Image (tube, rainbow, N blue to C red; front, side):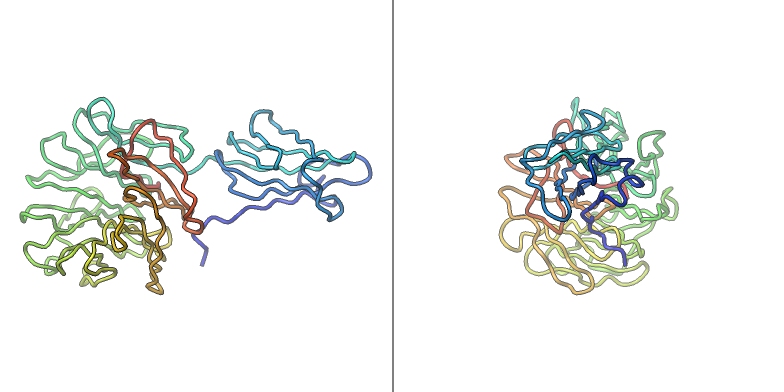
Amino acid sequence: MRSIFPRALTLLACAAALAACNGSTGSGTHALAVTATGRVERGGDVALAVTDGGAAVPLAQVTWAVSPAGAAAVDAAGHAHLSQAVPITFVASAGGHTGQVRLDVPLPPTVVFDRLANGSYDVWQVSLDGGELKQLTTSTFDDIMPAAAHGTVAFVSYRTGNAELYTLPVGGGAETRITTTAANEAAPALSRDGTRIAFTNDASGVDKLWTAAVNGSGAAPAAPAFGFGGSIDASPSWAPSGRLAFVSTANGSPDIFGFTPPGTPTLVVGGTFADIQPSYGPDGSKLAFVSNRDGDTELYMLDVATSVVTRLTTRVGTDAEPGWLPDGRLVFTSFTGGVATLHWLDPAAPAVIHDIPSGGSGRHPTGVL
């Protein structure tokens, strides 16, 4: 099974392969070997190292040139920040010899979110490093809670007075209303193949889990015999297999249940605390969620195969609304002092939190899966 976590990329330019791989012959009788290790994407950082005949060359002795100029900046410790999504060549010179490594730098993943601007919430998208910021909806009423999969964005809009579901293409385009009821539909979740949508509907007086085709046809309660009349459902999330996770108060407290419709939901994570906002990872092997089980409201991750729960964040304020990127990173919202901001982390190294520049406050982030 392919790992969902991003792998560190190491590229080696050596004397034997340098001319073929990088178009360089070096100078003198041999070339230096240059490696670049780290996350290769625009906005990412890599660590450069140089060896000469297998022996490390002190970076204080290395002079760097970058092509194209301005595409990256290298500091004295050999750390390079990648500022452009272009092929970037790093040329190292030391002791009369040179060597190089070329990195093909892609754009970072895209995040869809909602943001308050000009008096109402709209759906926006942005690259992980803050580039390509784009407003997708422009209603004067609130458009919120976006979900994205298979080229489609689903969202909730109040433009007709109550909460209804709409879709539009990733990147923007014509909007399609897919629910037309007197009830409130909210919390949309798209299946990974883009054919199904799960959501909540409050026609019974409280929110219950429903599913439909992505065009809204065939809408019906997903588990009508589950829970009791007053139990509340929330926050559905699809695994690639078609399994649904969602929150319910069927056992008294907010717990996470899972099932493959039309099966019977069973408890996945729960207790006397609140476990909420489940989100399946790209291959379904991990389930991120939010809990106050340790006192603070933080992000956690369940290993589906082993049922092992790992706490991901330990921070001041509230960390919530987890969503996944296709490469296995998590995006989320932090709430501190009443201000919502967007961040991402790598579950393999969750202590390092990265900001997502979004042009202001942002909520409900999700990757385009």
